Image (cartoon, rainbow, N blue to C red):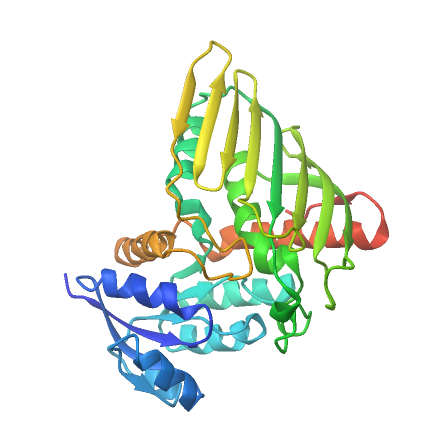
Length: 342
């Protein structure tokens, strides 16, 4: 099968793990263009990766040989860029989040559906082997029915991180810890335990940071299955800790901590997946992680394009975590229980 010809749009902080993944997948892909309006960013990128660069987005959109693009720009630019790519017939792998509001996210997803192009979203935590093993066990009923699921996201970002223009603002990022950092683990949680039906939350900006949006959220949640749990998310926890999801089943309890899994069965058996020491990104350097899970998601996206199926993390799948985040922030603002939109 011929290799896919790709374009990369955006050469900011998020690009390196994507570029490394595409180098690894060179038997399947050829990067035809990389675009940034910034000459300095194009020059800096060229020192690390041998991909042809261009200074006009139209060079990618007008190239009929390019069948897919990676959109790696700030969240508030996604809707316009993805619409243009979809209208040009390009499949899209989009850096999370979908957009800065769920209304704009829905419009983005629908634009791809109307154009008949595949949309994938970079929520790569779903491809960690420990989480994949737990998902298989849950689907097989190895823990019995789920009665509880709690998620802890205790990360660290120094003030210098939020001093960069646009970081942690509603206008550019759409929010704080939930939509920018916690979205990965919350998406993984939903893929394991199923949808959340109702939340009761507190959300605040702690004294640790000067920023517009929330850096700390604490919530009680009820899943559609009836299971109960809590969500504890922050970027104020120095020096940063592995994210954790605890699933309590009728016949076993699972602890998914970073890239490690331990399942304690009521009959005394223990199921374990050793950590692979590649979680990272929990501390001051958000990009301090390897690209293994990016590569796995890219491979699934390419498979989806070839097989004409939805990727594992499609636009519709990503909307689920956006709606959960909306409910958490609404509850945190009004102090009431909030139903999660379906």
